[in-house]
Image: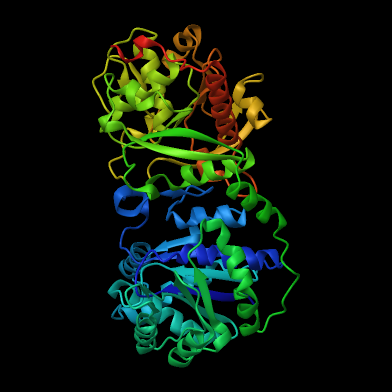
Length: 551
């Protein structure tokens, strides 16, 4: 029988439920257990696809095309296995399903209520991944905190599952905060006590407490927490602030979180976890031999979570290159031809990030021109690739008004335009090209060399595409479409062969980068940044053209 572990949070949000869930799953996986993680979000949006990144951070896309919470990115990066549509459920999806059933007459005239109809659907979704006996243990992270009004149906559903399945088959791990008051020089347990009390008022008691803290928990404090929160003393787990999220699995292993979970579920301990590769990665991450500075040109740079997968992909690629990647966030809305040199001249490489809408577009184009003209390693992702095509059309092909129809529907040179099948769609949610698509790379291209293959598969999230009417003009002028979708002929990858590193991709490679398999494009890009830095330092003077900021 599949076992279920529920990870809940109290006191405050952003304590790191997703990282604790991923770390526990990593340890259980290392012991030989088939493990996956799912996230239940209490907001009423059907999925995060229409949410502004400032509201909810990055929207993470799975292999099967689901627009999901960014925590699913952590799950994949830690476990090195794919998640799917079934791994992320929202209140909106739950209610939508129940209301649709009610409209169909499925409830035979009964009054549809939160209990039992909504909670039954939550339980059905929670157990969906365990139906075919594919997993030994399913970890479910509940979004929000205990006490939130919108979280109550989920707490009730977990209470019912524990009652139905028994304590050995359903376990609750509660993440909470032990604040340190510097003025009093004391750790305070009262917020944790209140959080547990609030949960118990709804009939659910935690089996294990994971306590986020700045200072170590001493033995008597653990005993006090266990006594007042009605858990065993060994089930009070210390979660000290870590220097990197990738250090948390080793912290949890030293605290025996995985062992205690297995004991409480009456499961064998499995094999001793072998985390040597993980430790090797951490060692390279913590003790780099060099450093590069890469500019991230975007319009959501104030919020780090907006580009979470890109930042994590740089961490993976940096470790492989034994190089610390320092990201310099540059807001594209404030980038102009006049200040481009000042803002970009000390960078070793430039990445132009994905996004939607016209705000900050001209700044992205200015950054791309600067990188192209000054031979600075350039990497464009999704909108970054599209704007690279617009920049090339304007400044190399002489099409002054070239643009994407997303920003300028009336442009005479629509080098980027909407896919035909998208033109009649009026709803926003889930209507883009989403999920994994095949791509064929030209033999001998830089991309094919980086991947070590001419046939790849990558994840997408976009509506607009390169306009193939301009293919010949681009290729003759020096920007080569080296990757295309074999089924549709749509352009997926462009390069400028004469440039040291100039690659634009229509897909999102950052989604597939993990600790164990850093994405080859990011690895090659960081390597190119190192080489550019070495070349510049070797000449002892900048290699930028004086005229770059003109025009």
